[in-house]
Amino acid sequence: MNSMRLFIPLALVVIGNSADVSAKQLDAYAVCPGIEDPRERLACYDSYAGSIPAAANLESELILASLDSPGLVSARNSSVQIDEKTPLSIFPVAGLLSSDGPNHIRVINPRSSSGLRDDRHVEISLGFKYPLIDGVLGWVRNKVSEGNIGWVPDNLFLSYRGEFDFYAIGGTRYDSSPIVTRNQVPGLALEWRFGTDDYRSIRFGAFHQSNGQSLNNKPSVLGERFALSIPESQAQDPTACQLLIGGEDFQTYSLGRQRFEVEQCHSGSTDFALAQVSRAYNFWQLRYRYSNSDAVYADNLLRYEIELRTYDDTHDEIFWDPQDSSRIEDYDGLRMSVDKGHRLGGVVPLLLRAEFKAGTSSLAALKNFGGKVSIGMKTSSFVSSLFYYNGYGKEPSTYHIPTEHWGLEIELR
Image (tube, rainbow, N blue to C red; front, side, top):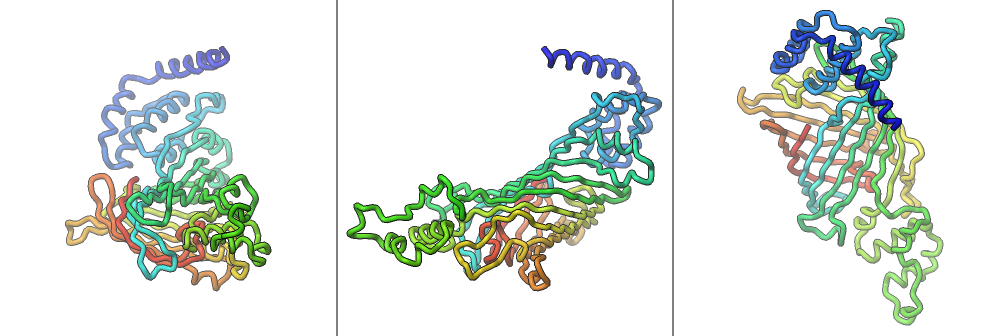
């Protein structure tokens, strides 16, 4: 009943606003969406705008949101003049779900020279963002003085990126569960967008990153999987792993290292045990992004990002090796990427990309880098690339081990 009481007045507001939109203004939605150039398309809408009450403007924004990219809608929202008496209930409180950076499907082929042993597998990386208070921030922007407008962000985003490995094309790294979580990165981020002839943004946010694995240094019900004592029935003829458990040194290990040693003994592989290691940390992100086009590919495309991370509340200790005091900020914290569009011979559309990340705990940590280069070709709806990766920091569980691999990548946006 309460929901009906709320719905009826909201419906009356929308119906009342619809009556104020003339037939001529509605023609804009039949004519303007077919214009490819974003600036010309906006100019088309403006030519039909005429004199529309503030509330109708907001309704128009909701309709336009389904026709334009979220970035253009937000840019337009920031310039809408809102009447002080306009009720907050008709604000476009939420926008559209969109990708947050490129989404990838990769076939990974590890090099034999890699420090991290691995099998060939498929990786899927998915990222999205959802604008939470787009309209409210536009209203705040119109409330503050002109000199303070720059302090008001364009939006608050709920962001998520997940990376999953599929060991379903052969290999012996996992004896079960071919779908393996590598990265789960949820967070909240404020974003400022600016620029008229190009696309620039600054993002500041808080994120949590973990790999969702089971091997950690804390007691939990998952510990029931690890037999850390010799059953009485096998005490007379113990296995090699049970002899390890019964040793004097084993009793001095932390719980996490005990689990690691048992997993390693049973699997016969350090890498197998490392793949089960649970890692988690929180971080703050400050990122600057520039692009001279909002398209995934353009012949003259130049796009780059510079990102700084600072870590807090980390659970990333190398508990199985007391001699190694490394932490995540020794291998990550500074990230950069550059995309360049090029049409080879005036015919073949290529996308060239270079990515780089390094530690920020000290100047010496800058040498602990991970770098990736790729060359791709644009097709009708995606970019397919060949890539090569070398360095540290591929994933949370093995960030301190160098890895080298190459593969085929399909980028979806």
